[in-house]
Length: 53
Length: 317
Image (cartoon, rainbow over all chains, first blue to last red):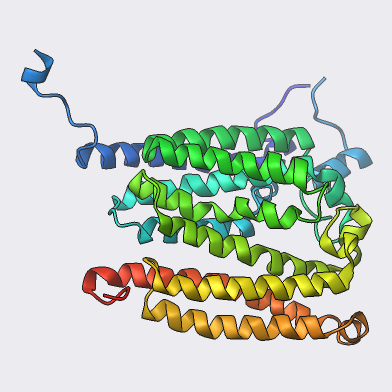
């Protein structure tokens, strides 16, 4: 049995899928925000040239 | 064969029982999570090291997710008990909405995610303490103590007391006395809070054969225990006013709340079952409600002292 795009299954699981999608988008936003916060607060300062050499 | 059925009764039932997003969220025990969030937040802000606001937000978020993960693992393990008890019968697993295996998978995945993310966002000490808290709640409390000893809630209460310590560690990366005072406050508060619940939930724990104090030592002994623990808690809570987390605001709040809490414990101690049943455990119910306010306001006062400190208003100056 093929699944049509408008199948009842999609309606039934819409809320769940939407919830998971929002959680994933939220997680991406958190990781991105954390990266920005860490980089701008100097936690990941690049090593100076003389330290590398 | 796909899982798509035709219009049968079975399909209709499956549709009604199908887990929604909210059912998975309910596995994380949102009400317990709110306590975790608040106490961890206070631990984070009471620490003497300033934290970047977004890093602080992430720390609280991952501590909350870790707390939720341990809730899901607890529901997976205790599904048989939850099925019997009135209070827990509607939880997602006993209600047939979520399978035990799904709860286990969600709990394990979120445990790993929260510990790794908290470590990356803050430091290894905080991540390790979160991992230990999940282990303590799931293995030490749920799997071991809960079904074997009437002291389950006393020792197991430690699991709920760790969040302010994790919050403090997230900010500082090192141990100090202050977060352990907050730990002690929740640790000593948990037994009278839960035993009051046991008194008015009456047969729930008996039916589930969980060795709560009311079941093993009787209801009279439980009333005595509530009084003793409340006296010890009052001494600790008021004494904490004169430490690094306290101050005049905390002292005022603590004296008032402990006077009310002690009065409630004495009233519980004076009553017998006949009196309690006559008013449907009114005093016990009021004590339980007060216990929620008690913890919230104590931590609120610690927060107020910490927030006002930069202006020279918090603490004892």
